[in-house]
Length: 398
Image (cartoon, rainbow, N blue to C red; front, side, top):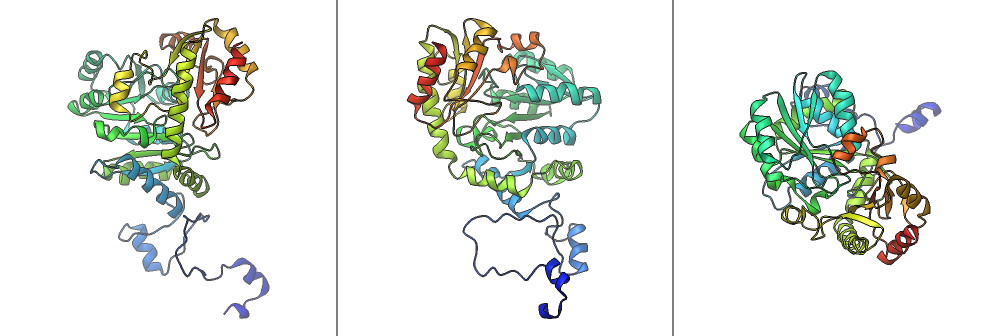
């Protein structure tokens, strides 16, 4: 039929697919919509009577393949099923979770040392909508239970462990048990650890959030997020619907880049962890360093809890310079090998000064209460030769 088409029509139309054997790698389905074989098929898919793709905001084969892999990683060895949905960023994953499960009058109980962006999302976006955030010490389990027990409007316990950037850990099993006892929702940001180092479902958590931009991808070339839940009805229903209608979906290109990065996840996380421990031990002995926050150090107050919840201690650490804000700025300006960048989880070492960067919009009193001091420096340790990282830190501290 093609030879009978006029020139412009031939330009505009797709040719029949030429695939004869399966591709070795996941293809990128760069299409906004999908064609139906008949109107009957279209009706069945729209009504949910048949499986099929309609529009890439609703679902896309590339995106769904990557989501499935992340769900399998989070449940690996746990003998349970979960579903993952990919989003345009980690922030949109958190926002969609809250939009789907909370309503005006509900409250989120969380910690004060969250990632600054999450704190701002909760307090500046959801608080004016009538969804209040309560900041408390999640390590004080008696206090947490008292708050949850006495305030039925607390619908979600949300936490990071380890926390960004102080590396504090909270007891996931205990917090999830409190949430379950009082019929509340528990959710954890597992970005720092990835499923290789930590599987929150093993501790009873309901929902897991990732900024896949970070360690899951590992190469700093895409922005995406994931939400994983074992309540399949909720994930396939309310949460998927909220993603679809709010338009917080991931695109196939960014999903494919995450997929590519995951191939080396185990290898990278082992090297990140080994390098970070070596650097943390070196920093701990340096006279200009007041404190090192790394869960792998015996000196870290949460070392035992981290060891219980994590397979290894990861690539994230922070340290406090003795001379405060000015020392932090001077130190950052002298860095040569490491990269000054407001992200983490890449294969190269990234360094950030929270007080002047990631947490600049968090009130100082909240920042200081949670150990995010003026002289605190966050290090996302890469997979380079560790001697080169140490040499750069040494010359910047000199």
